[in-house]
Image (cartoon, rainbow, N blue to C red; front, side):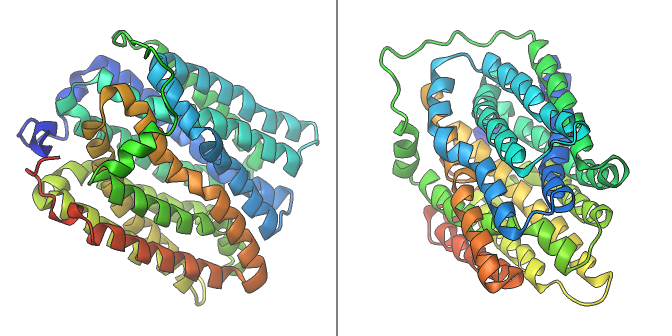
Amino acid sequence: MKVDSITNGKPKSRFGGLWRHPDFMKLWAGQTISEIGSRLTRDGVPYTAVIVLNAPPSQMGFLTAVGAASVLLFGLLAGVWVDRFRRRPIMIAADLARAVILASIPIAAFAHRLSMAQLYVVIALAGFCTVFFDVAYQSYLPSLVERENLLEGNSKLAMSSSVAEIAGPSLTGILVQLITAPIAILFDAISFLISAASVTFIRKREPPHQAPTTTPHPIAGLRFVFSHPLLKPLACFSITTFFSMGFLGPLYVLYAIRELHITPAELGIAIGMGGGGSLIGATFAPAIGRRFGLGHTFIGSVLAIAAAYALIPLAHGPRPVPLMFLMVQQLIGDFAFSTFMINELTLRQSVAPEEMLGRVNAAMQLMTRGVFPLSALAGGILATAIGIRPTLSIAVAGIFAATLWLIASPLRKLGASNAL
């Protein structure tokens, strides 16, 4: 398949055919609301741990590790399920389960019984459901829209994440100060109910799912990825990058609030800037890929990501200078990251066989979010030993090193019309 075939050889309008695709619009609307709600939990849980429960760096690292452990433990299993069963029911069940699980946090807060132990359990169970939803979600899209519309579909769905990144963090910061972090998470539970309803109302029937005569092997997706000349360097880059980013995850809020003395509302604004960058990236990712070719797009994006993340440990000086560092980092980093991920996902969906797309997507998730438990634990321990800022500097060095996987691979020669 050629890259041109993804876009049918024609530049796609920002307001192309999928705007007139009612079932895709239902999925898109539900995901937009759900993504905004998810930001309330993503940022609200660390706020709850730091502000309400006064968690130290080691507990913050363990909290992040628990949330990411689901991918490591169940990611490949999710791929097998998605390839054996229909994907839409899996998405609906995962949304409903997450709504119930997250609602337990505000309930416990009302009862004055909230604890770190409950946060660990909630994050673990919600993460388990998210693994199945995400693998099914990425594998379901090619059956909902035509193959030539995949890039446009991925771009629009990434816009949902971008809009959520703009509105969610700022909304979280405000809600945390007005009604406390645990209560803010209630809105995420409601958003998952809306997401489940939007998927339920899709009228297009999912194609008949022929279950394989033998049980699919869980590591078949890994074998496919590491035997593919283009997916292998992307996988190696993901492992290295996301392991390094895992150091940042549990420390970012702690670093911003305790060392840079940024308030939750200000931090929400900074993270919201990342949403703006992500929205720009999601909007122009297809055009950038066509204009510069996939190889240059991939390499340029990852170099910009690494440079942006370097601004985090470099942040210093009197207020509001550190806030400006984080705002610029979020804007540039999320623009580049969104551009990279949209083109990478479309490439993956285009080269993976339909019958094992779930396992391929699960394998790539394992090599992104799955490495977080190990790196989050290591980051928390290392920050306790040498300090937060030096640990963040080590993470940035790892992100720069990860770019070598792509620079030294066949991907650098991949143009807009090269064969995939």
